[in-house]
Length: 113
Length: 114
Image (cartoon, rainbow over the protein chains, first blue to last red):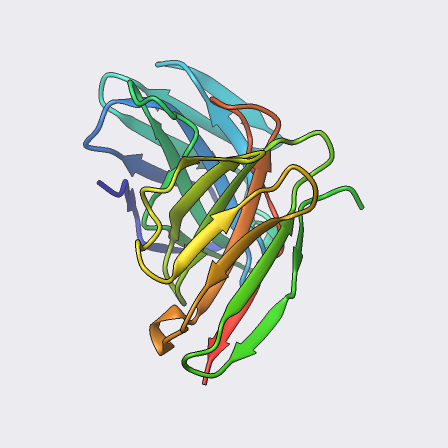
């Protein structure tokens, strides 16, 4: 039931772009994206609520395809500060307590000079 | 700093002892979630609480683990008779309401079992 993220790891040079995907086998109500640096707490990036919704946060944006139960996170013109592990967290549709997040397998991103 | 506060940051226990982890949510937040993270792995949901109520404990082991969020004071995650496999980082998150919305995480408690 854990969402599957791809790729598992990616190395970028500063300024390059990356896409991280999150796929669920269950119908989704919302998708959350977090970034976690080693030894630190996960930091909230954005939440997508509706199918087809796209959101942007500086040079980081995301889309949510409700029909395919997939979400993608887009990182453009990457910076060194983008390094970390990215997790998607999903909320399932139709559960009485929709608030708990099921986190994906994680994507480790390293940005180099 | 009005963020989610967890303490202690690091906790060392011997096998068989009890561990108590505390979480004070952000001001104005009445919903608390506990997650466990093993090294190099993702976050696993444990329990979701509101003040004086456990809403969802489907991710919490039925034995040795308990959680509470009293009317006054922080939320407590309690692990009795700890074993080596309990070693992990335990994160608390809070949100102002149920339903879709950001969950803000504390810095976590790193529990080590000797």
